[in-house]
Length: 136
Image 1: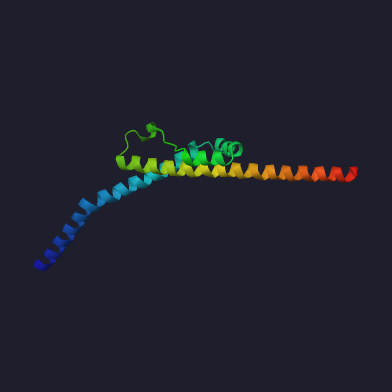
Image 2 (image 1 turned 120 degrees about the vertical axis):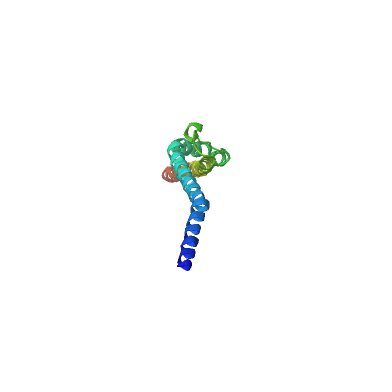
């Protein structure tokens, strides 16, 4: 009977230690994941992809460089009343995702403009050659 009480006491002690030490860590991890997911979602919603596409088209490689250099920051109102872990995860995810979206759109604009420019140039040369062939 004493041996059974000793095992029961040991199990209760282990469970209590888990609840005291591990549960706050697990709760903190959940808060970090929630902040990261919310930050990624907000970045995708807030970044103006059309503007970055236009910057890539008009600016070319300079527009792409601007997209890499410009660092977006999240709205502070979304972070009021949140824990420091949540704020850190949200901010990090927001900046990373927003930069990924804006650089991707800038590259797309730059490449699209280059392809269109080359196609127009090739068509212009072909048209010029065909008109010179018919004149002579």
